[in-house]
Image 1 (cartoon, rainbow, N blue to C red):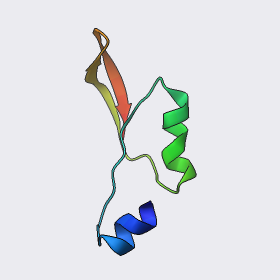
Image 2 (tube, rainbow, N blue to C red):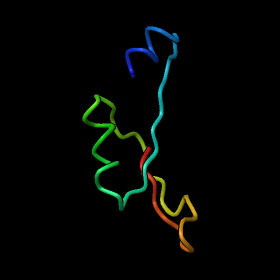
Image 3 (spheres, one colour):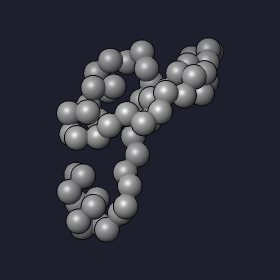
Length: 55
């Protein structure tokens, strides 16, 4: 998918954001070669509470 984004579509950057508490989606971007660039604290309202998010 990332190869298609960069080579096929000519994109410069692809961004993924995940909630910090859900461990499987947090590991997925690293497995496909992405790196974590930000930890946004209390950035998203989810299920009645503010939550942190990785970008």
